[in-house]
Image (tube, rainbow, N blue to C red; front, top):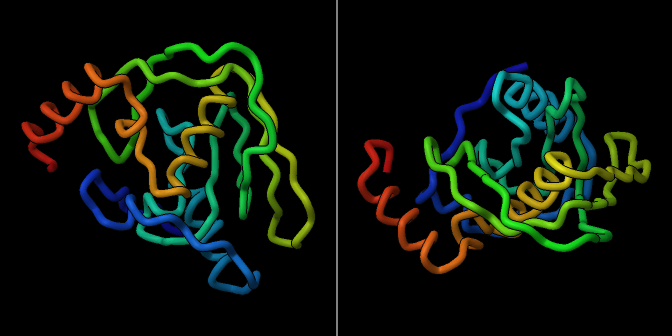
Length: 163
C-alpha cells in the first residue's frame, strides 16, 4: 500500500468528472488500498480518487475511527435543512470556509466484490459524503461557496505558495 500525493487545486484531474468503475480488477483493488492508506492519517476525513490523480469513481473515509471506501457512489438522499459549516479540502491546503451542506446524507455504491454498499451518516460523515461525491463530479468545494466566500477563497488560493 502507498500513501499517494494529494493533487492541489488547479490540477485538471480535479475538474474532470470521474469515470465509473466498470471492471473490478487488480488496478481497482490497488486503488482502494492506496485510497485507504492515504486517508488513514490524522486530519483526513476522506480522499477521492481524483485527489490522488486517478479519474475513477471511488473514495475512502476515516471518520470517528471508521475507515472505509465505496466505488461508483451516488448520493441517494440528502435530508434536513442545509446549513453553513466550516469546511476545508486536502486539495486546497490551509483554507477553511463556510460551506452549505445537508446535515444528513446517504450514498449507494458497490464494494470490491460488486456488492451494493449503502453509506449513511450525519454531521461530519454527511459532510464528507457530499464533499467526496462533489470531487467525483469534478467539483472542488470552493466552487460551491457563496459569492463573497468564493471571491476570498480564490484570492487566498492565488496568493498561496502551492498554487
